[in-house]
Length: 198
Image (cartoon, rainbow, N blue to C red; front, side):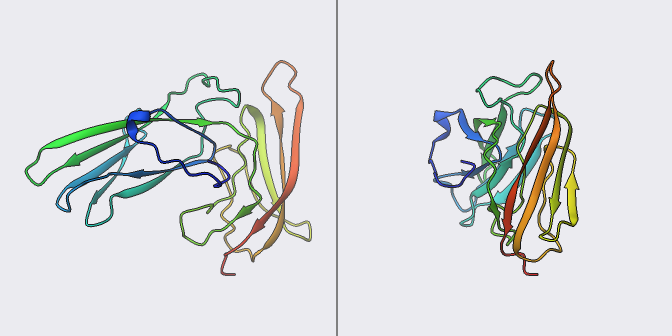
């Protein structure tokens, strides 16, 4: 889940799988032969798809981070989106293949995590602000002296801490609610950067 406090092992037959955005999923092909070719098609529901192809040799696992939701925080489908689908294709040395699919529902969340660690371990590498349904969306990052050091204007954006030392930073999220009221949205808080090697 988003906070990283719970890990569930689910076979693909239990599809779909739900998680709060940003939602990191580890895909593991079990019981494969070292000579098998393993291809993961991320976002198989889209064309063209991105893929990761690996030969087992003890490495049949990939990670994929779903940073955009396809369901709102109430569990309703977001208009114009499809469930994310990850397809696994295993091909043996004789060219015979088999496939499996799993549907991923990434649910919008305002549960911001307050620590990120861009240390290349594949976990919490980027600070994101999962607030969706806003117009004029903007996130600003300030250092402890109040200097603006980074900003982004799309919910899919984020900050990897590049060029900044470890420490506590301040974020401000602003926008307008995309409803009939068009009311102002503002949220602020702190985030701790650890492992920047600066």
